[in-house]
Every structure is written in structure tokens, then in C-alpha cells.
Amino acid sequence: MAAFALAASITPGPVNLVTLSTGARFGLRAALRYVTGATVGFTLLLVLLGLGLYEVLEHWPFLTEALRLAGVAFILFMAWRLAVGDGTLSDAKTDIAPTFLQGATLQWLNPKAWLASVAGMGAFAANGEPERVWRFAAVYFGVCLGSMACWAWAGTVLRGALGNPSRVRLFNRGMAALLLGCAISLLLS
Image (cartoon, rainbow, N blue to C red; front, side, top):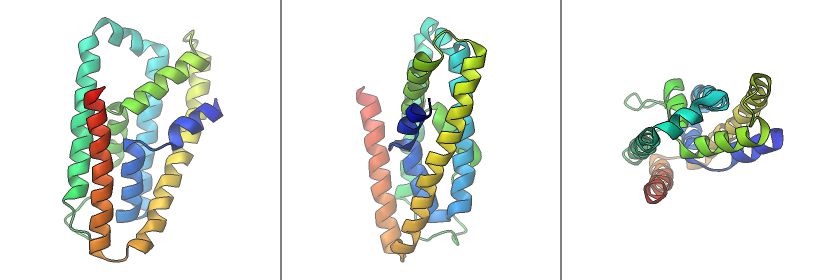
């Protein structure tokens, strides 16, 4: 369970890219608020899928498509926020770090989170037995929180290397381009 959770949590994806950027732009404390929200949001998604939400989505496939499109829109919004930033770090008064709620929301709109949840529940709690669902969710919560905290810490380390607004803008635009790539791949899938 833990190995699966680690492989799914620590690999790059939209949420981890935003986490890295948040650590670089706003510091570890702000990034950890976002990380906590993303972890809680993912764990809630995992539990609900394990307890039967997937069956609801199979009955109403338009909801799956609506979630996919909403995910693309939210990822594009986050990319836009990164791309238009002025390159100042946490002392900027006009830019706001991603929040706990945005972290949780992005997980619900993140196809990687849905795939990891469905695959994980299929592998470790396929029968929907509540005890196994909750055990897997508890393991995943700890691993996900730690994995994403690593991305936040890496961003904080990069913060020192960025040094000036022009480097920060370049970094932000690179992160925005990666998020744009994620959104395009979602549209084409």
C-alpha cells in the first residue's frame, strides 16, 4: 500500500507542480497550507471512491466529462496565475498563495488523483470493505502529505537560487508551461 501511494504521490503532476511553485514563491509555511488541503482533498476522494462513488459516475458518465473539463479549466487558471506573476516573492501584497481549499479542489479536478484513487482502491480494497478502505486511506494520507511536503521543500530550496524577479518570472512561466502541457494532454485524452 505504502509503495503504491509513494509512487503515485511523489511523481510530477499538476498538484505537485503548483506545490513546487508555491514553495518557491511564498515559502514553506504557505506551501504546507496548500499541501494539507491537497492531501485532505485527495484522501476524501479516495475514501468516497472506495465506498462507491465510482459506481455513481459509471451511471452518469456526463459527470466524469464535466469533472475532466473542470479540471482542465482549473489547471489553466493556475497556469495563468503563474504566468502573469511579476516575479516578486512572498513579500508581494498583490499575489496570494494557493490556499488549503484550492489544494483540495485541484485534487478533485486532477485526473491523476482520480486514476490513482481508482487504481489503488482496485488493488487494495476492491471489495469496498470499509475497514480496508479506511486503512488504505490512512496509509495514503501520510505518504501523500510527506511526498507533497518534499515538493514544497524543494520549491523553498529553489527560492534561494531564484534570487531576483526576472529568474522568478522565468521559473513561474516554466511551471505555467508545464501546467499548460498537463491541460492539453487532458483535452486530448
